[in-house]
Image (tube, rainbow, N blue to C red; front, side, top):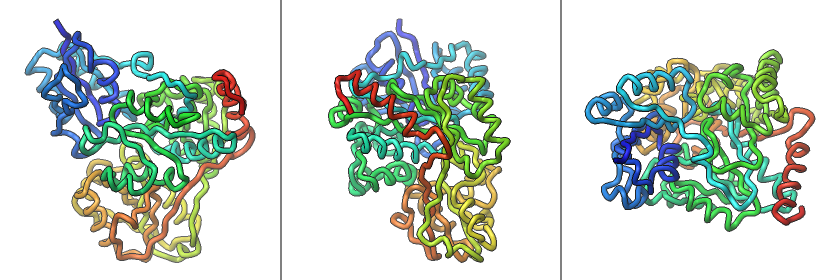
Length: 447
């Protein structure tokens, strides 16, 4: 008899684990997915077109809070945990519930879930959401180009719409973003790469994504989401740590596993962190992954008119996921406002509307900052209304996506972007070039 399975997820790792481990195995019967972290992704079905012939009716996607009732309603043999950036304690609370109901609690490892590419793979991961992975990915594309290598970026999944239509997504232009009806969160990841003429793949079915992406690449760059492990087996695994959150590298799943497997560890944001916090992160690397090569990285703030900030009452709008399940209290816009002499950083909470107001209930650590939450049309409308309600002189947007293309804002606004820069020696190029040389020679190509 087949073993019955429930997969706990957040519209990403859960679907991938199903596709590569369970989809075509008659020894298992997946009863349901559950959904957490991301709004409005439950209540759908994983479609039969993706689920395969063993699941002609697809698979239900339920709210995670329905898990206990589901376990008590019918016998479940295994509950597979499959999402990221979760405190170790929370993971074990879920494990305790599952064990109390008689089922196995399962964590699938890379040996069963990572796909093997025919091209070299450099993966970019982190110990927490919001460490600055995207800017490192862009830097890697630049370095690959300098070595006459054509990179293709494959992004961790963000399938929040029609899953069957999102099975394989290839982005080469802003028109592709519109065609795929991308949310703010998706655009934040894709737009900066498209601005630099990079091809990006994402979607749901990473076996097919890999087949297509490696056909047009000299090298694949895996751009991870949250602090998840790569879906592709990496030849070089780069992991970012955040000295603004020292100690978190030991406290969150599966970020600690990322660090324990890192080839290169980048201490990000070293230009704005306290020396003692950088030292604490260095100690963690030395204890958990002493053989990793350590690089200091900086996040350079990029603005066209920084003088416009001085003396202004400012509303800062930061990257949403970094502030919510990433646990950060501020981001690049806050740093820019402080550095450039804003008269005041306003508290947006009294003016927040709808879904934006709910964010402050769900994440009470947030104060003088508005997260750019836009997983759907309703959230985007609430975000726009909240911004326009704040009596500010200037809105500072520090979202990787250009929100002025998506929202109608009545206030003057300024976009704050950031890029990766080396903070000392060795540099990322110095550490990476010999590794790339060896990988290319191994596959019969010289740089």
